[in-house]
Image 1 (spheres, rainbow, N blue to C red):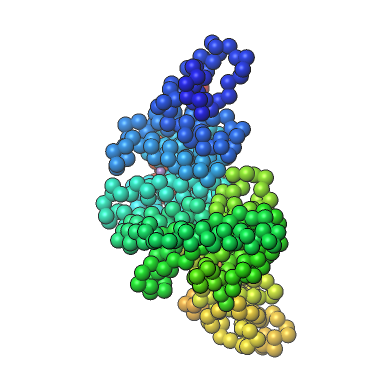
Image 2: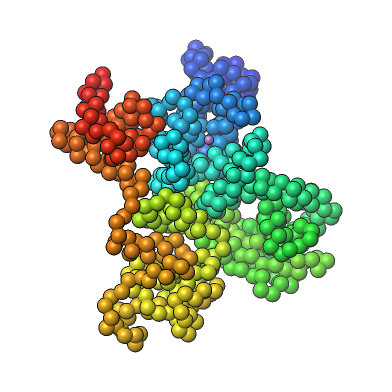
Amino acid sequence: MDVDAGHGAALGGALPTQPGELPLARRLRSLLSWPSTETDPVTHLVRTHRAIHTGTDPSVLRRAYTIAENMHRGQFRKSGEPYITHPLAVAQICAELGMDPTTLVAALLHDTVEDTRYTLQALAEDFGGEVAHLVDGVTKFDKAFYGKAAEAETTRKMIIAAGKDVRVLIIKLADRLHNMRTLGVRSASSRERIARKTLEVLVPLCDRLGIQTLKRELDDVVLLHLEPDEHARIARFVHDRPGWDAYLGDVVAKAKVALRRSRVDAEVAPRPRHLYSIWKDTVAGSHGTPYDLPRIVIVVDGPTTDCYAALGAVHGLWRPAPGRFKDFIASPKNNLYRSLHTSVCGPKNRTVEVLIRTAEMHRAAEYGIAADFRSPRTAGAAARAQQLDWLRRVLDWEQETADPAQFLQSLRCDLAEAQIQVVTEGRQVVLPAGATPVDVAYELGPERGDRCLAARINGRLAPLSSELDEGDVVEIFTETDAETGFEADVAPRGPRKEWLGFVKSPHAQMQINRWFAEHTEPGISIADKVRLGRATIGLTLRKHNRGLANDLPLLRLSEELGYPDLETMLVAVFDRAIEPDAVVLQLIDLVDHRH
Ligand code: MN
């Protein structure tokens, strides 16, 4: 980029200057933007962003930065750096993922509402409702008002916001990644606490969204904070292993020749594992020294069928290791990851792992859900809408879980890594490891679950509590299945309490709890209180023949009354800590006299 071109340079060279433009107009434009390229911290961000989104006008990014910088001025990170370095770094991570300008603006402003005098209302007026929604989604509930429930409620709020717009989760992940990168200056105990929370919720969320580029770094930084010695040991091992690069170079060259002979156009490259993944395999296999196999990736130029042609070429060159072939193209992982995996007996009789995929699959494997924002016209966009199915289901539990801690627990459980696939009624179902026929029954629908009586696993009758294995074929019988031969003369029965002792999927747990909740008093969650508080205000307003077109007057009032956010005020209304009539009269006053 041109850094020394007179007035135009003041724009960081990022704004195209019209060739016929008058110097005065240029000077005016430069006065309105950042004073100097040398010190302009946004330039790098703009450059990264425009490398992918060439058409973006960077002025909105600069405006967001200026406001964030202004608001955070005088605040510092624990490291002593000015606070603004954090939101800027978060926006940079989002830009590297290829996110759109709206996400970057929200990333720059993501801590303003929580930590500065900037309000959500002002933010909405300055940058629009979309940005406000994203920022609100990552804004924490106030501990002073919510106490112990704050953390779980915050997660729940974030997930709900992500249900409307998944970019909330992407900003949260980038936020946590930067916080983890800079955890070094915190106390040992808070490092461990934050690392553990990251491992339990955010890393699995990242995995579920398929954003491997972020997940790799989060994994490694978690390992660094939880097991610093192990991190150092693996890093040392990876750093000095003689002959490793030369060996991989040889493998890549030979694979390329074989592919060319089979007329498959493809890129071939070494595919190093990240430290966490090496460490996990080392521990899992109880290896004395770190365990890592040479690995390459083949990205074919053509269609999916070329992947199988490439597989043929590789297996023709090197003998495949038995039982190591996996076809994640025919049967993708639950985060929609697709590739062929195989292990072969490579040069010098060493086992080599080979990944084979198309360019589209490669992009999806690296960026997951973020790939849609990177290039909105990619072919996989429609398929990746499915990626959000689990999120929708999570939102279903939200409707049914009164207790935020239970919600968080279910989320963790659903995100647990170990999963099995079973077949039922001709379709594949992904369940947590250790799942039972009852889990399968609820997967088929709540009525099937509630009425499930018996099951056959691989053709044999089995107890409903049997733990299923990968690949099992499961048949579910309910009292309404006429042909089952089970007596159907008993009154319709619901689930059994003891099922709660063995079901593994949060979905099944939730459904069973829902059934029992219908016979008992439901608890009231903060989310319910917020909803009911809002409804109360709505009804009271109607008494005065008024209504509200949007939340902005409520937001302003909550600020004027000194609440940390709108939700807190609505809870106060529900709890009758403040009288709805009083709130409504002040609200009307505010609306009528705002000019
Ligand atoms: Mn932050």
